[in-house]
Image 1 (cartoon, one colour):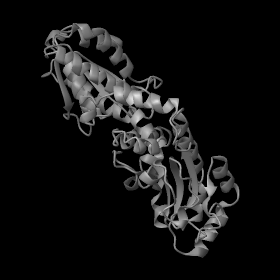
Image 2 (cartoon, one colour; image 1 turned 135 degrees about the vertical axis):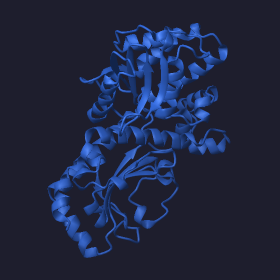
Image 3 (cartoon, helix red, strand yellow; image 1 turned 90 degrees about the horizontal axis):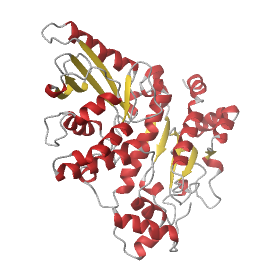
Image 4 (cartoon, one colour; image 1 turned 135 degrees about the horizontal axis):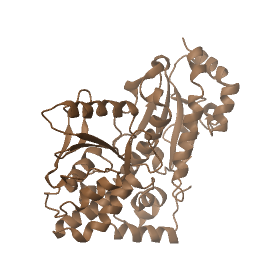
Length: 405
């Protein structure tokens, strides 16, 4: 995908969409998919005594969707957030009536693990046996961003179901300001939590039509590029956590400190490696730096001349060993079956791609590269290419463990 310098229908459509959209309160506060922020808003809506005036309408529908049978005593329900009473865990929302205590575990990006579920269930069981609480039973609800993630061990409700119920209840709100607030929250949930990843119009204008944006002096939100990069990286890393739990949990020598504890708008790359590998200068990296996202007129360095000038995300096997003989020996080791695995996933050996006019014969940082073009027509292709590259890199685990000292 090359940057366009000609006005076309797509450009005009994006300009129209960008002009029609305006930042909501949640955009200005950069709420995004922040779990704690969404938890507070949901708790406000679940409390029947709050200013929204919904009384029991929303909390009853919410619990019915989650197959909770005991709905008695909701009018006097105590709704609280982020209870840290149980050991080693935190309960997102607790709803307590005279007869039942209900825990709502909320996820906006990740998925509930059975270990977390077991810890929280143990706390709820203890509450039942504690005579001072006078609670007869408990319910455990999992609020999930993924409609396809069906757990066998927990009652589940999805954010899509929450949004559907709220849309039907909008006419029931007492105050216009609460209607506006809830509409904006619904839009935030649909954009940031529920729907699959897609680039915003402002981002596509900057990355695909940057020449036209500058030529016509079009004012757009430049921060959308980095907000979209954050969303893309979070979707990607969520998949890595789900598919390769040993990698992200620091088991089997994987270096947990190297991996992102939190992905923010200013996170330009994601890195993962084993401690043994990192000691030898080897890492797997996913790069979304500015020089890769934006189209460039030329390369900044000769060792980057293998790389496209068009907007892309790059996956690399990084090797920072300074000894040329050790580098050659390592590449020779990979040049058999492992090289074929990488090539089938779209990787190339960088030293073979450097052009004749480059004054260097290697890239001093990376040895293999996979460049993923930013596809605006089908954004899921970007994620799928990152997944394919990650699966290929992780097939090298045993070989690297055996090769490195």
